[in-house]
Structures are given as structure tokens and as C-alpha cells.
Amino acid sequence: MTEHHQHHIKLPEGSIEKQTTTLNVGPTHPATHGVFQNIMELDGEQIVSTEQTVGYIHRAFEKLAERRPLYQITTITDRLNYCSSPLNNMGWHLTCEKLLGVQTPKRVDYLRIIIMELSRISDHLICNSIMGVDTGAYTGFMYIMQYRELIYEIYEEICGSRLTTNIGRIGGFERNFTNTAFTKLEKFLKEYPAALRELENLFTRNRIFMERTIGTGPISAERALNYGFTGPNLRAAGVDYDVRVHSPYSSYEDFDFKVPVGKTGDSYDRFLVRNEEMWQSLSILNQAYKKVQEFKGAEAEVFHADVPEYYLPVKEDVYTKMESLIWHFKIVMGEIDMPKGEVYHSIEAGNGELGFYLVSDGGRTPFRLHFRRPSFIYYQAYPELVVGGMLSDAIVVMSSLNLIAGELDA
Amino acid sequence: MVLTQEHIQQRLTEKFGDLVSNFESPYGMLSFEAPKDQNLKVLQFLFDEADLNFQFMTDLTAVNYPDKPGRELAVVYHLHNLRDNVRIRFTVYSDINTPDVFTASKLFSAANWMERETYDFFGVNFVGHENLKRILNVDEMDYFPLRKEYPLEERTRIDKDDQMFGRG
Image (cartoon, rainbow over all chains, first blue to last red; front, top):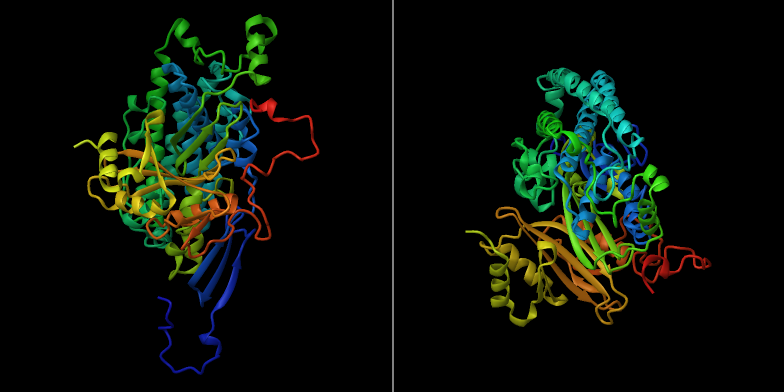
């Protein structure tokens, strides 16, 4: 594709038609959602080569984590994929629990699944509606935003914050879900399907959208696997790998859901996979909410595991109960050392397998913590996806990969 | 047939003999180590053999152990057999003065940036890598920040010693 095959007339060397243009896309370009730089070599509108520069918002999370006790690292994980912070938080808590050997009660698992699936929806709906924006349909994005707002209100009700949530603790949640939280969840479950159906109708059979996305940025299953793709981008290429199914955590094995797969691995398939995943998430949410409602009486009050040495006690108890005060003091002052060991735990985050590799030497902080960030790993395939295509398609491909700068740069 | 950890261990020992060692299974994941000059042979063997089939590189990173002389840098590979759904962890150790390890980027395209990141933070020199330059830090940086010799806190601070973090 890189030859100048469109020229039939013999042109003298050095003539303008024979030259390629270097274009600097980014670091802050309105068409790239986040801080991404690409130095592209263009022949007319066609991309001859491109080189990505990453690291503009690198914040040394892995180094910071080496000086923080486990519960202080949750706030760092918020800032990885900030479109779905609760997923990262839960992934981190689950990693700690694996290291510390904490068993969580079923109700906690189901509450976590509610949070994780809401978070997955909020992640996918941004990605899919942004793809609309990049192909010229702004309305869907503006419209669907109010439903993300409903999700954020649920987070707010549970943990007090919206974007960087710091939700939950090692062993469970900071407080039980209030009735308001469940009412808000019900409202979301009732209203969102219609909105999602409308968003879907706006795009899936839309002529402009289809022509812009079908066949752009395709990748074969084999290449995708070799590049370490995970999540919706891998599934769009036809591989049904989903951490929730392959290595179930937080009682995902109790739920019944499908893993949607695509065929060609192009932008359109990535859109369709994410779209179908939102339907599956809704189904999981309904199942989880039903399961949570089945807990009655004292069981319905369970919102954390009984592990006082790791679970930060509820604040009111710290002020009123001697024992809670002692545990609070012990945890905050760092009197409890972790067991030694190496642990790898991964969850299915918005972009794929989010892994935590934690090495503990028995201190109060990790000896080494490494985040396996899916965005970082699949962004290296970007040149292979876009070279030979049009510049305008490269922008859509980038949105369809759902690159999140925070996760990319860590 | 289910791919068991015993089978993987047996196949590796048959092929590499005493070179592969320290088989353990912390938190259910088979982990082992090999000399650093064998890393590509082991990875290739795990990749090619039909019954092992470790063709997915989940993660590649390094750990700095300043207290292990001659083994200060550990390069850790997490591999996944997606067909049988088995994960393994493979470690090679290197001394910090000659941190040369062969690149796995020819075998796994995914390793390309992960090796650049590992180089960027630990200074592991991946021999044969086509584009081994810094990736997240600025190009002008002249040290490897995740090595333990670079403290996070400002050196003039005396109020935060290692005792506060359960060490020392």
C-alpha cells in the first residue's frame, strides 16, 4: 500500500507528488481523546508509517506503591483507567485478598459484581458513543451521558465520590448499600435498556457509521493474540477469552452470561462487541440484584468479611468501640505486616485483562507492584492497524480501541 | 487431557535438565527459573510444543532485589496457555552490572513495549531488541528509577525511615 501506485505519469524526482508529509497528531489534539502523540508519515491522506509517543501523563505509580500500605494504593488504581475506576479498585482489593488469604462473603461478592458491571457499562458507553462523535454523530454521545450520570450517582451513594471512586476496602465495602442506592440502581436498570437500544439504533445500521468503521483497523485473531490483546478488542477478532469465565473471581461462576465475539477485528466489530457486552452486563446486574435481595435479616447487613486485621473499621465504630479503635490504629500506623509471597491476580476490566503482580517481602508496603495495563499492551499494535489506511480512519481506530491515557502511562 | 503443573515440570526437566529449577506453586501458579542465557530457548520450547502451547504473553516485568548478590535483577514472564487455561510464571535472574537478557520480542509482539518499559525502569538490556529506548520516562533521564537504590522520598528527609514500612 505504501507504493505510489496512483501515479501513472512519470514524475521527476523531488516533485511534490513524490513527497510524503510528516504530520504531528497530538500530544493534545482535539480528535484524540487523551494525551497521545503520533508522528505520521502521510502520502496524501494515506498513512505510510506512524510512531506513537507515550508517557505524557506518567505518574510513577509503581514507585509510589512501594511506599504505601495496601489500602493507600487503592487511590492509585483509580487513576489507571479513570472511565471505570471501580473495576480497578475491585481488582486491587481482590489481589490483596488473594495475598492475605481473605475469604469474602457471597453478599459482598454480589455487591462487588453490581459495582463492576455498572462500571463496565459506563466504560463501554463512553467508548461507543465517542466512536459516534468521531464519525460525525455527536447526538448519541450527549444523549447517553445522562445515563452515565445515573451510574455515577450510584457510586456517589455508595462511596461518596464519582470519578476517582476509591470504592470498597480490603474485605468488602466501607458501608452497606443504602436503600437509596438500590432505588437508584432500579431506576438505572429500568431506564437504561431503552436508551441503549436507541444508541444502538443510531449506529449499528447507520450507513455513514458502517462505511467509516467496517474494514478499518482490522486485526486477525493470531496477530491479536501475539500482540497480547485482551478484552473487547481481542474478542472482536474472534477469540472468546474473558477473565470472568476463564479465571472466575468474586463469584462470577454463579452468573449466566454470554461472551460476545466478532469476526474481523475491525472497528465495527469492536463497537458491536462492546455494545453486546453492555447487554450482558445488564443481564448480570439484574441477576446480581436479585441475588442480593434474597439475603434477609442479619445476612442483609453483611457488607464486609470478618477480617479485623486488614479491614479498616467503619468510622462510627472507631469513635464508639474500643476494639475498632485498636484495629484502626493498628492498620493505619502499619503494625500489621503482610505475608511474604508473589501473587498475580487479574480481572476483566473495561479494556481487558487488568493484572496486578504483587511481590511482598513481608513489609507493610509492597516490595514491588506491577500493573498489567491492557491499553499499554495493545496500543503497540496501532501502526499495524492503521498503516495503509486513511488518516481520518486512524482517528476512529484509536477511539475504537478505547485507549485511556491514564492506564497507558500509569 | 488436562494440562497439569506436574506435566509441565516434567516436560521442562526432560528438555533442560538441571537448568530449570526452583519449581514452586505460590498461590496456585507454577513458577520456576532458568539461567538468563536460556530464556529464549525455554520460551520457544513452551511456545512450540503442542502439549504446552504457552503462546500468550500476559506480562513481562522486572524486580530489583538489592540483597541478592549476582541476582539483583529478576525478569519475570507471565505466560498463559489459553487453550487449557493454565498460567505459569518464569523468572530469569541477572546481575546488575551486566543486565543483558535476550529479547522475547521476536516471539511475542507484545513483548516489544513491555521490554522497553522494563529497560526504562530497571535498565535491563534486552539483547536483540530493535528499538530499545525509553518509553514512559523522558529520553534525557540518566538513571533507572525503579531500582531500589533510588529512594522515592527526598534524601534530606529523616522522618520517614524504613522502619515505618516494616523493614530495617
